[in-house]
Amino acid sequence: MLARVEAVSIPAGTLPRTRKVGDRIGDGLLYGLTALAAILGVLVVLAIIWRVADGAWPAIKIFKLGFLWHNVWNVNLNGGTFGARDLIIGTVVTSFGAMLLSAPISIAIGLFLSELASPAVRAPIGTLIDMLAAVPSVVIGLWGIYVLAPFDANHVAPGIHAVLGWIPIFGGDPHTESTVFTAIIVLTIMTIPITSSICRELFIGVPSELEEGSIGLGATRWEMVKTVVVPSVRGGVVAAIILGLGRALGEAIAVTQVIGNFIPMERSLFGSGDTMASRLANQYQGASTDRQIAALIYLALVLLVITFVTNFAAQRIVKRFEFQRTGGA
Amino acid sequence: MEPGAISLRASGRGRRRLLVNRVAEGTAVLAAVLAIVVLAIVIWSVGSRGIGAINLDFFVKGPSSDFFGGDGGIAPALVGSLLLVGVATLIALPTGVLTAIFVSEFASVSIGRQIRLWLDVLNGFPSIVIGIFVFTLAVKTKVPVLGIGHHQSAVAGGFALAVIMLPLVARSTMEVLRLVPNHLREASYALGVSKWQTVLRVVLPTSFGGILTGTTLAVARAAGETAPLLFTCAIAGQIVDWNPTHSVQSIPLTIYLDSESADPALHQQAWAAAFVLILFVLVTSLTARLLLERSRKKLGLQR
Image (cartoon, rainbow over all chains, first blue to last red; front, side):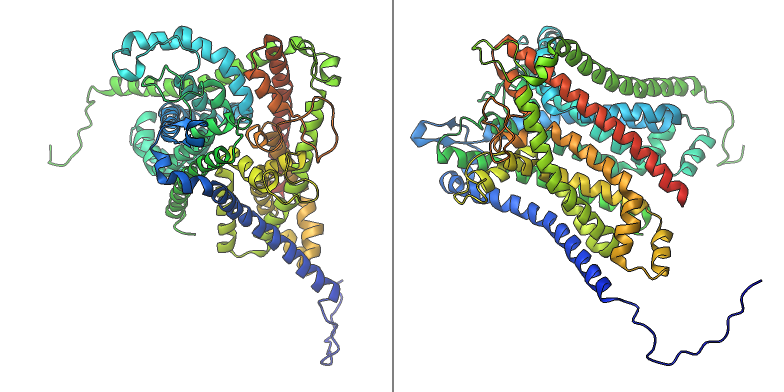
């Protein structure tokens, strides 16, 4: 039987205060602590930009913007003369080269996982490809030096050279071991899991009504992918590729292990080269003078600006894309 | 036929379309196979070359003092990595979890979005630049703080790793907190429990497993990072050193230095250390991912 609730009249002012003093303090404390932590994250980003810009200042004063297009890296010349041109070119060439290879492969993997594989296959294969991202870069680099580089120099590069050797970028001696080409392959391997896992999520998110409608109209799977799946998430795919690019631009260790750390850069991909991140990794011990340290930090600043712009662009595209898809919800 | 009507007669292109479809499907399968084959080759290369040098001595001895290398061990690097990752976790775990609590329990949608954006920006910074940041902050600075400034140390290296772990911990914790069913919070409030008690006694315990696995993934990532240590914790002695204010050896840096050396005996050491590292990283991230999947399912069912 239900208990009958008697009408209760409470005299005004006798209700206990519902919020105890301890709870007020507890709530305030938790709010303060968590807000502090959140602000700390933002502060670290600002501090990184400030410290790196500050550390680079002596070099900025000496080399000005000419640092970007001069191509000398000599500790002894005039008490240290530094310019980053070939390092910037090396960074751009390796990263974009890697993107050219990794973008189609990653999109294909994303399509395989989202459209072809059954759920039972999707999970383990997806996990395995994500594991490729978990392999530390120093291990990929070690493998790059002693397994990939000799394989490239003995089999891949001579093969390409024999067919396309008349193009300058595939010219030169194809039997060199430390090459820009190997660095591109290493970066491709490192960016595939990043780009492909985002692509997979994007393709899975395409509404199945659209896909079924396309199939129902008689399209083959490929025609469905070409006309419905990829166009509806195009912006997201571009962002996924740019995020992979950001990773490739900043990778230091694996690149420095295989690229040969040599400037001026050769015209051929089968020669040695260097990138900004790789030069930083390579010179950490050799940096003896204040001016050289400042030049290295200037280099870090340039790298920071480039990756910042790249990632920011990718985030903006992703945001705009999410906005479009959810209608701003 | 009326104008505008669609002809239903076979166009004769069906065979070609099916062929194109087949080729496209084959390419997609091939791409996935390629990625997995590369993973298999990397693991096999490291395993087959590294396993020969692994024995008990490898884990308990220091590097050989012999000029020509030889059968040394990685004990100092193991201890050093433990210290570095320990310091990093000590800093990144509370900061990351508190940040996530702020975003999911206190902040408005737009502020939450802002903080997420900054964390993504931090996550996108090259790790070598983070190393240089800590170098200018703790190593090169003229004011020694707590006796750890003005020289390389495990604290400096650990701090650099913490900056790398922070966005990872915060983002993964946010994901898990978002999965905590709202009716649990509401039930708690309905009982008159205050917000901080609800967070500490309902929200955090419910998402504990997810936070733990997210942190484990971040630890696995930090344990393999080399670039942030180059400027902050690279020049170290050859003995086991438990003092975090000293510069210590670490596994990734040992692999890097040994791989660049001209001595084949050290290459062997590099492969063996790489085998230990890759085993640790793959086993921990695989376990963490499986557990994460399970706790996600568990939370999903409660809804």
